[in-house]
Length: 196
Image 1 (spheres, rainbow, N blue to C red):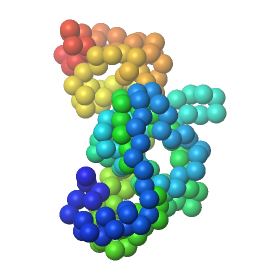
Image 2 (cartoon, rainbow, N blue to C red; image 1 turned 90 degrees about the horizontal axis):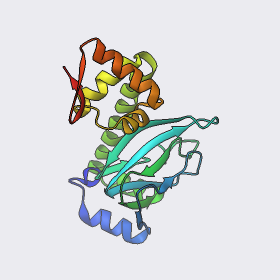
Image 3 (tube, rainbow, N blue to C red; image 1 turned 120 degrees about the vertical axis):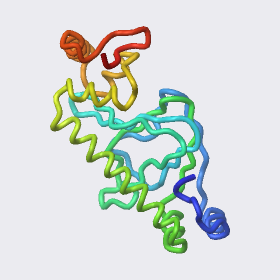
Image 4 (cartoon, rainbow, N blue to C red; image 1 turned 180 degrees about the vertical axis):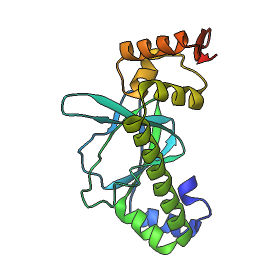
């Protein structure tokens, strides 16, 4: 697991023994954490994948990312002054999480400098991803976002899923894709829309 890679196993095991944590299972579609709820623990995704999304007061949804095991959820939130989840986390598949309280993580990173470095890398990587994601949505057109999506995923097989991830209505996505097809940038094949 990247967070504990190279860490002192004896220190980690002792702290985990002294400060209880829990291992939980979720089914596909379950809500793991709700936007606005208190965040007091680090969520370590051991199996499966999850969606991280934001929901506006009007009910508009925006999918920030899909995270897969092994990854750390809520790494940037547990030590924030607000102490809440700014996102909703949903199970994208059946998954298992190790939920470790803030005090345990704090003790581990105080006693093991390698785990502290790993933790800082996790936070920095998540922040870098969010900066890139913000750039995609704030500064790029829908056509540019579609092209970026295809570059990262190799194509668009499921319009509904792609619309969900791109944070647009499916009809808007369909219109933009058809324009890209008309321009000769994309083509439709059995496996979906790909570059021409």
